[in-house]
Length: 138
Image 1 (cartoon, rainbow, N blue to C red):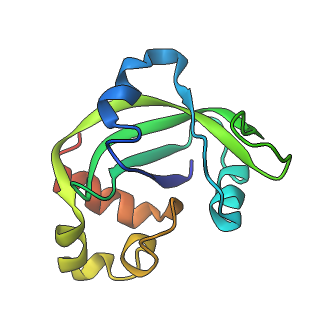
Image 2 (cartoon, rainbow, N blue to C red):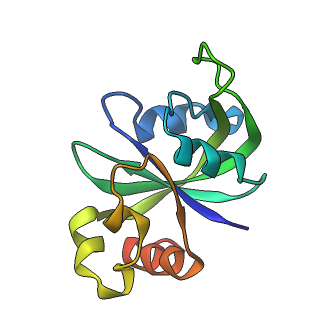
């Protein structure tokens, strides 16, 4: 299993909205960055990801699972853009802020620290474990 981070501004698409979609999940649409698109193309069913509120909040608030492989983004006019479908799995009991991530030397190489604008990014196994620990995820 690989791990990822999905960023969304809460006023555009929030963790609560994602949770309300239930088991059927939702397309992760609107990504218009080649690197982020390629990350979605690399995903496999069952991969897990952090749901990160960017802009206001700037914190990891939930865990999602990839439930549909990369396919054409239904909001795109061109065939260039793909997306995956994700479903909410669980809340992060103690949301992990960007400041807390940046303050933890073990996370210094995390993409979120070094390329915070990338909307869909990989997370290493070690980073996943550290953040789950910080967030009280069992």
